[in-house]
Image (tube, rainbow, N blue to C red; front, side, top):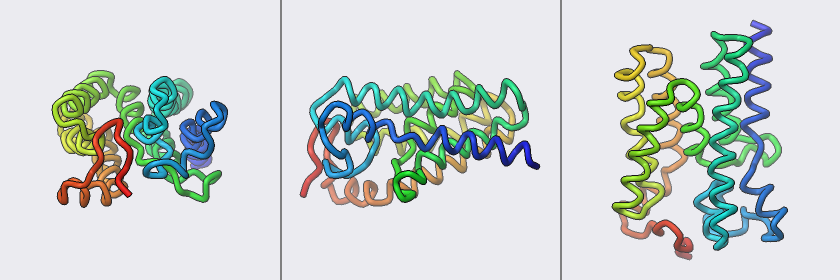
Length: 197
């Protein structure tokens, strides 16, 4: 039990690093929480007009999910699911930001890559195809995560992986509640556009 607790704390702290906030501040762009949607993720970083920072945020947010699972898996094989969930929760609810974090899209995909690279790759491909077709980051995430639990089961045949994918997907949907409302009303901003006032 103490081992799993240590795994959870380590992965949570790793997942809680707010790369979007750190990078934009280092770049002299101010507090990303005061820009656009106020989110600390890559989509909102893109609203600063700096595509490089947005790409770096995307990669680093994904990498912390991957790193948490792989590092823990190297020492505590059965702790990978705890690590994946804890890292994801760290991004959603970082202690450093008053438990107000991002929506977890990139971090969740990073966790998927570490658990099963085909799962991560397919979810990323679905996100990309949806984004190119409709230009909505939120819709792309919702579509990718809607199929993630099914893909997890089909690709791995392991119920713990499918269950973790389901939990992460439900949390992603919960964090996108406002986006879903805007998508339905036709007021959701497209990728690269500023959030409507």
